[in-house]
Image (cartoon, rainbow, N blue to C red; front, side):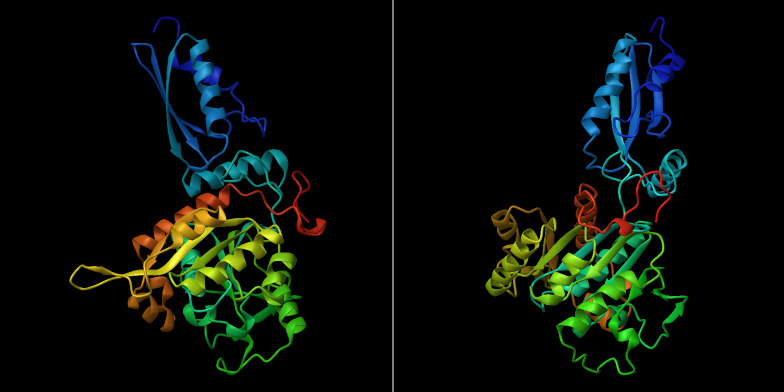
Length: 380
């Protein structure tokens, strides 16, 4: 292509800026490769922070326009940054804007986080018995497997199970200064649960609402969570004080709703979804647990009725995140404290959908000022 070189393309792309950060796509390392063909085609691989990046079309258009202005024929291929690449970009953004800035995986903007926590996701159902704690645990596990720094907060004070699922029972919790140090699971997930503070894990927590509320608040504010990409909250069941405390006292970015095929479960899940909407907490989507089971012969059966998660999600106008099977292996490993050893394609796909939906959420604007990080102020 006469008159156009790779250097000319680089120069043109150096003027293509992220519309929110004011940094070029080259500075942000979004251009992974450039090939200038003799036929006039300029092939560029553009790396996005996530598949759900809302600035995708803007960035792609601007790159194509810059190449077209040179007389080239743009061919832009989209890819997604790895966690390592995203961390490198985060470092660049912080160098420019200060230690308080983060580079979201939803768009090219610094966000107001929660201390050093990028996203806080709750997992709830409105009722017990649908596998809420399993979903919360596996969300943490799958995010950790993907390379993210993850914590899990067991807000189900009277029915705590996180410590047992991860094999943390009997381990001693210590404090440093005025902060509780969360325990770490074998894969490095930080965890806190009421059972860790009890001499007898089978002992009943016979507390009135105010005490439960205070414990939930302290598990967030008085625990040294450190820097996390995700904090997962295993919510208490129901729509009363404890659940409302999570939504109104903790800076939750969004909630994942867990259901099962039974009609009663779907009815109560509807109440939970409406509660979340009432207190203005975004609903990330709905996962239907125990939707089916696979027989050794290969047949699929529906022990709790035909799946209805898709229909329930559509009814409430929220994304459907997938169906999960009944799997005795998951129950066995959770009971044995080895949930991190469990893996399934269905959970992996559901958690990936959760992550992509979560990245499109703006952090809560209901936070106290001292809980927020402002770009350029180095944090608080």
